[in-house]
Amino acid sequence: MEIGTMLRNKRKILGLTQDQFIHGIISKSFYSKVERGLNEISAKDLFAILEANNINLNDFINNAGSTSKSDRLKVEILVAFNNKNKHEVQELNKKIQVSNCDQTIKLSSLLINAILNNQLDKINLNTRNEIKKKLFDVEKWWNNVYTLQLFCNSMLIFSFDDLTFYMQQLTKQKNINSLSFDVQRLIGSICINYFHNCYKNHQTDCAKWGYQIIDSLTKLPDLAIYRIIKNYYQNFFTGNQKEASKIIDFFKDYDLKEIYTVLP
Image (cartoon, rainbow, N blue to C red; front, side, top):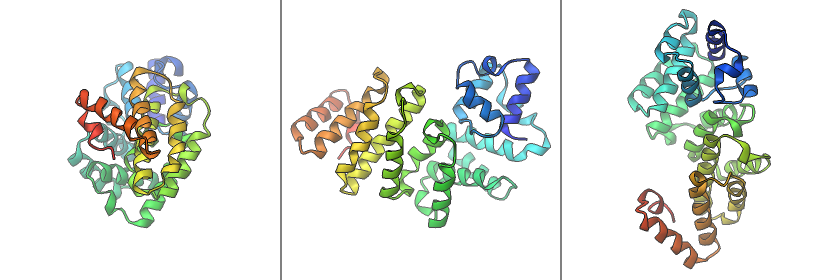
């Protein structure tokens, strides 16, 4: 039994329409495909929908029945990933790799474990290529919190040419500012990681793709940090050290060490 089927069954038991069941957490069109097994729901959205409908997460997993062991494992590792529980993710990954879960779930599990346990460098080339293919097989990957989160945290396994290709794909998407806040936040984080890769690979001209994407984000205070960091890189890459230093001073004034200590 797929997670989408489990959600549909719960929804029907409650006598709710799809609109009533999702409480505006995700779009109806996206959720409809989740129920049909065509879209992958993120851990955060799954938890939010269950909570909104007063469905206990453990009950949801345990009531799935013996035929849905792979789905229970999938949900459990998403929960552990969301909670940043390294040990639990490691143990669940071991179970998933020897289970009858499909290859997509096994690869996602492998990547989740590598991200949380700082083992990305241990993933061999063939597995990396398979992960890349599966990761972007998701329909509208740029609007999928789960895919974006994995991509954001695993950019180290991609070559610079790969990263630039996916950044160019993002620039082609219209109305990024209409996407959910969580999606825009992840897209902003991906851009910041890309700028760092531009710096490391001495390809500062390619940073223009990230500038374009960040400029298309909604102008919200909570997303302003991405614009400020973008402005830093833009000044730094063009040799405008005076303006770049002003931005570093701004971060120092507000004791934002987690930002200014990692900037070049």
